[in-house]
Image 1 (spheres, helix red, strand yellow):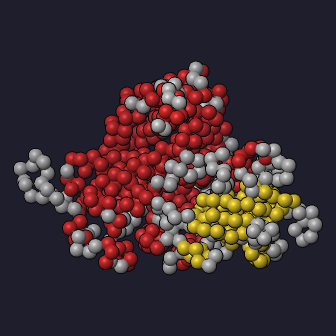
Image 2 (tube, rainbow, N blue to C red):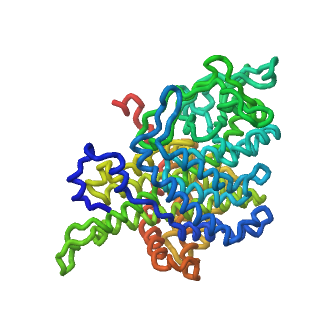
Image 3 (tube, helix red, strand yellow):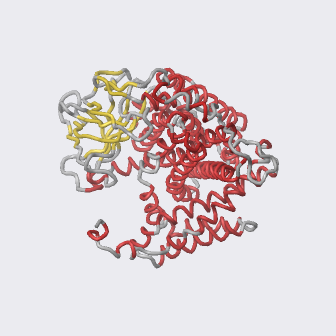
Amino acid sequence: MIHAKTYWHFPFSTRTKTEQVTHVTPYTPPTQDQLLAIRVNAGIEELAEAEKFAHAEADLVEAIVEGVGQFAAGEFAPLNRIGDLEGAKLENGVVRLPDGFKAAYDAYVEQGWNSIASSTDFGGQGLPFALSCNVLENLGAAHMAFNLLPMLSVGAIEALEHHGSKDQQAKYLPNLVSGKWSGTMNLTEPAAGSDVGALRSTAEPISEGPNAGKYRIAGQKIYITWGDHELAENIIHLVLARLPGAPEGSRGISLFVVPKYHVNDDGTLGPRNDLRPVSLEHKLGINASPTCVMSYGDNGECIGELVGAENRGLAAMFTMMNNARINVGNQGVQIGERATQQALAYARDRVQSARAGSPDKSPVPIIEHPDVRRMILRMKALTEGARALLYYCAGQVDRGTLGDVDAKNRAEILVPLLKAWGTDIGVEVAGIGIQVHGGMGFVEETGAAQHWRDSKIAPIYEGTNGIQAADLVTRKLGLEGGEAMIGLFGAIAADAKDEPGLRNLAQDCMDIARWMRDEASLDDRLAGSVPFCTMAAVAVTGWQLTKQVEAVAAGAAPSLAETKPVTARFFLDRIVPEAAGLKAGAMAGADLLYALPSEKLVG
């Protein structure tokens, strides 16, 4: 790592892109902490006892985690800074990525990383979802923008596995599972953002000719992540549109599969479909991810196939959305890990000032100063905590797949916690990383600012974090009449006998859940939803960290025997009390929010 004073001799404008890239901290996979979370929080050994996941034996799990970490560090990470500096470009109707992206993606496909958790019926490895989360965690920590490509494909696979016809599954899934083809989801339109029911894209049935039984798709979609590129041989777009005479609102939306290139009956690719990228968005971050404005049917010949039942597209898309929300929560872990590694490297090497109170007045690395220590420990505690929450959620998803109804309901509750709080801490940790760098964090050349810029999209997409909190206090609070959620907090309180702060936080969460269920109006619930979501996430996370500490004390992960108790203690003693302080806001109600009429509020 170059010391800050060295940079002053090389202004940003005079250095080549290659020189800028060489000074960015490399990615080191946190393999042992990941394995601990997979074993303790996901419960991988218990999952492997089920016939469906019998291949997830300890040696295979370790090989996957170590192998994808090495792959991510070697293939994806070197492209992170290049991707930020050069970005995706639309040239003559073709989306181009910087040199190296095609080779890295081809290696990803060739090594089989895309197929970890997909069904063996379509060429997948049939392993637990928790392991596919680890693949995405490593790839995203190495290069968050690039990782969005396989992340979106996972969602498309999930939607077609659950809602596609047998013919559609046979036609599209093998190449999606391998990664040879990639997938997208197309919801948002210029006049339909979070209110998906307002979309206006259309699907006209075709009754004659070679495409009889299919549909002509027409409309424009915006914010389509990896909507077009040349890395995969084909792109399978899942598009929401309206049939003629469909009901207004969300009840009248259908889902269609729309390939970039038509697929012949023998599986070969035919001519290009009538769709195109109109433009690429100019974004705050994730510059290597082409965020496209997509146009369908400019010439009236964009052909798609109905997925599932008519007017049931939103339900089908939400299968994909739920998966995506978990993977977006994962992005908070990813960017937190990368920002923490960068901050640690800088704090270790940057020498400035003597440590206050020390008799030795020699300058020391800034990691020796108390406030820098506080920032570093906070970064580590939040990131490791979010990782524990991620794998706990993934493990519950896997149990739900095995038919455990209670686990399925618990996963439903955990998804908004992970997506909202996980991405919030990603932003916080990346911001602290800039602070650790001081003025050099504000200089693009160090790379610290990129992590913060990249992090800011995650609280927005796949349903903003406010929408996640609203989902928590409406749909998820209603599971089993509220008892599923209250039971979760009860389990935490029962386990937290030796942690009064955590126990009290869990009790507060139970009290708020009961108040919201039994007394609060809908406005009151929504007004307190965000602080309540944070409280709930911190309670679950603290609980899962205590389980990690217990496992480490019993001999698991010897390499973490010194560090894990300290980071967990920091979380329990510093983060948990902060969350407890949110109770007043969670139960404050909505009256104050509407004390001023809109015209007075805006002045």
